[in-house]
Image: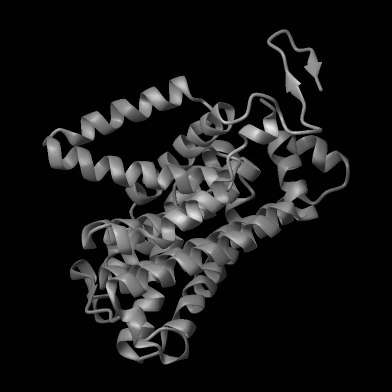
Length: 329
């Protein structure tokens, strides 16, 4: 059987499955699918840093939280419609990322990761203390689901909001795909693989890293802006490093360096968490053991495993390296 005959049209499969979730699943699974779509966008945004540029951020949750608070405050306090509040969350997150990224990209490896964490903890402290705006430790409750585009009230329902989130994820995915396929994306891969060589060729690597830091934070803010109306509240806990850690797990388990992998990782993480927590009180232990097994046995992630299982031969033009290093066309 040829490789083309065995290749699965995953895009079509996922699209059809997503369209039928509210019709075939319960209200609970519609809720879970919405949560998966939001965290999928969050994981994809982090993967622009980790998978495509080689930058490990422990503070990416800060931009998710900034987007959530921006959207929540605009919709609750000022009655701004979702179509304006959603991009505003991404833009504010990108603005903060431009400021913080200027300092963060001057460092590398663990120092970069720790500085991103420090800025996230700084914003956490501000959100915790600024009670008149953020609600402090109680968070911002009562974020409404205002009518969707063109005043359509159907989007305030559970199924309607799911389709709205799915459409936002699809649009964001298309933009991310165009970004990584652009010359900027190719340069980011060069920086990831060998930053000093890229510098020697004349590329301003710090400027490129600031760009990807801002772009990733913009999409992280969009994910947070989707979360606020979905959950109905935001809290300072969204800034915490554990949220960034969950996104890192999603990226690594799903497959870093791809756009589909983090989305698959988000679905795997949430579904596994829901099912294990319903079975045992020690679900966190089981979750950790499964993740360790996935990382050891499937180092290129679940998406890499699926691609290997559904295609015997590489795509035309691809290069495979044998164990002894000889390339095979």
